[in-house]
Image (cartoon, rainbow, N blue to C red; front, side, top):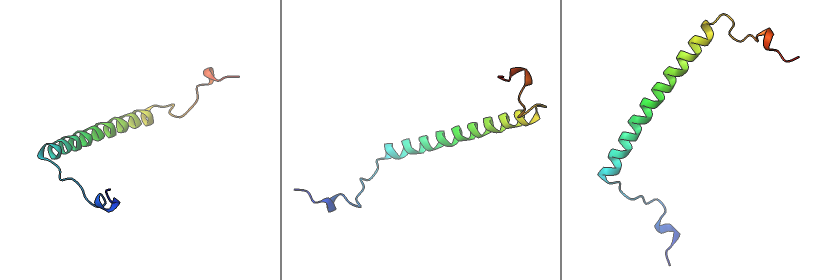
Length: 63
């Protein structure tokens, strides 16, 4: 029977393929986050530039 202490604290060494994959994923995630932040900044700039930002149109109110 295996003891629980055999698996604790031991990690399998990563192969070169796994290391390269993690590096690619890390770069892709960083690029994706950069694009999303740029999109969010662009959206907030457009929202703050519009004259009626944050105001409710009186014609579309539910009465």
